[in-house]
Amino acid sequence: MSDLADLFPGFETHWIDTRAGRIFARAGGAGPPLALVHGFPQTHVEWHKIAPALAARFRVVALDLRGYGFSDIPPSHKGEAYSKRAMAGDVIEVMEKLGFQRFAFVGHDRGARVGYRLALDHPHRLTRLAALDIVPTYAMWRDMDAKRAMRVYHWLFMAQPAPMPERLMAADARAWIDYTLASWTARRDLTCFDPRALDHYRRFFSDPARIAATCEDYRAGATIDRALDEADRAAGRTIDMPFLALWGDAGIPGEGLSPLDLWRELAPAAEGASVRSGHFLPEEAPEETAAALLKFLA
Image (cartoon, rainbow, N blue to C red; front, side, top):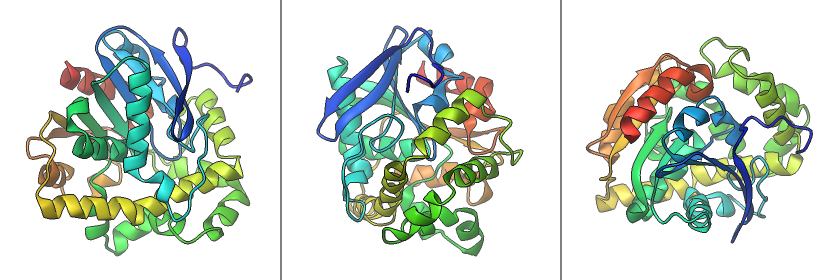
């Protein structure tokens, strides 16, 4: 860690003990508490371009999900330790130990899935929720067709039984993460990423144990998370807090049915808009993304 660049100057470093082990977080700024939760295949570093703007108004906590970045890697089988319900519990523990019972939440990709699960399981914990460049898990599986399956092949590949996906990805992890990151941007290259951030992502993804953790994350998505979503849908549960959906106009959600229509199935009062970006809004379009978040969070 010491040889990787600090992209959050002025932020504190925390290692928070939780039931899942230690969770790594960076915290900075002053104001109402705000949790920032990253997606795959990234770490808390993905927020570095917009964290200063958010920290001017909020107490920002950017954490690494279990198994990702610098956080501990709990053992798992068939995704059981990497359900979004379990990960949401980590976020609650981290925020509580930093002194916050209620907080706003901004999540991207897997982090957004953690956020909306937290909102369904513990609605009293969140003041506002923003989800970046996803649609609900149940909708992804329900509406999967040949075109979407080709675009999100990793959903099916990484959910295959261990250890086949892990072995194939670890065989050339640098090529795999570079291809994945580039292919999800609007430009289909790595130019939007700060080279120092890429160092973080590549280091994280060079560890076979962490590759295995990400596969467990996707196994949970194909089974546990999907089942929890479908149970909530059958019971008529919805998200009633202020909810913002942002998506890249060149991202995966923007290619199918209206993301906002899909979110309103789950969060009837959801508001949202597209951003000129691919999948990685905080790094491809930091100014536009920060402005939209600040307007919503205010």
